[in-house]
Length: 394
Ligand SMILES: Cc1cc2nc3c(=O)[nH]c(=O)nc-3n(C[C@H](O)[C@H](O)[C@H](O)COP(=O)(O)OP(=O)(O)OC[C@H]3O[C@@H](n4cnc5c(N)ncnc54)[C@H](O)[C@@H]3O)c2cc1C
Image (tube, rainbow, N blue to C red; front, side):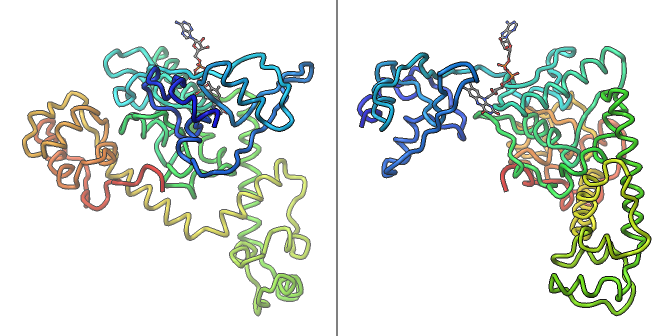
């Protein structure tokens, strides 16, 4: 009642703030309007620190006037006498349209200036930090006269984030959900070192300690992987154990790696029974084993996803000159010309991910580029293989 009867006094609802708030952090005004039938709403009182009595009221973000906020707080059972030391408030940001950036996060219009974080239309700590890392690295690489760092969608979540931003732009605060990545079997936490270690080291982002640690992890991975694949479990060693997890007995020696594909069978289950034993003293073994177990268990699915990512890269890497006169490319649809002009993608893959660009537009685009640059470049089955509709949630 308190919120509803004061809605027009909220900056978010009264028209003072025109921007779209982060979809995933709605204000209490938003919640009351969107879920009028909800009978309860949970608040969390979080201590602000060890040496203060102040509490942060989580779940009550608002832009209502201070007296209304106090009235709301005091209407909560147990908080009748609460004092409000600071009011909640709404904020509005301007942002730079991210489709005007290169995948290095450098402005197309002003080479040498790179942007990272919320200014590119994102919201969130990790989103800001990831971009900061990439833009910082690219600023340094540029100053050193070296090749830029561009992460692809199958390299890293940062690659997904940046590709989404520079390809599609955003009209509301962008949040990087795991569901935005199409290669989620490849982008795992447990394979981060294998996936990104060489790239990070190549551009000089690793400290000496991290470099050495990477070597250790890689060495442990190689040894543990060959143990899994080359160690055969014999029926008399493991059949009793397999029975405990309801798995069929072995008739002949079978590699441990293959047994991991059975439901319920883990390295932990078999490790003590087979010979030779896995060297326990290997540095970082526990973490490495967890990753390898997953890799072996889902090997078929992972290989399929890797093939798909590689195929997309092969065709998607076809370079598009930044200065292409899209408005004059009459073999493309009107919509495609407009959208390509706006985004100016760097590769055919990026062009294919712009909503509204059709497979035939892509074919014609390749012809136009070849005509202008005299290049050939591989493009097998572009109509099927160029990534389309693979980004976004789901
Ligand atoms: C109340 C609130 C709660 C949030 N909760 C979460 C959360 O739980 N989880 C989450 O992931 N995200 C959360 N966010 C979002 C997240 O905090 C931001 O998206 C993120 O911190 C943005 O980082 P940034 O480095 O891009 O920008 P900022 O952290 O805003 O950094 C920009 C910096 O630039 C400085 N600056 C501005 N102008 C100038 C100038 N002219 N010269 C020099 N310096 C300048 C500013 O002082 C500031 O320090 C929250 C945001 C708010 C407001």
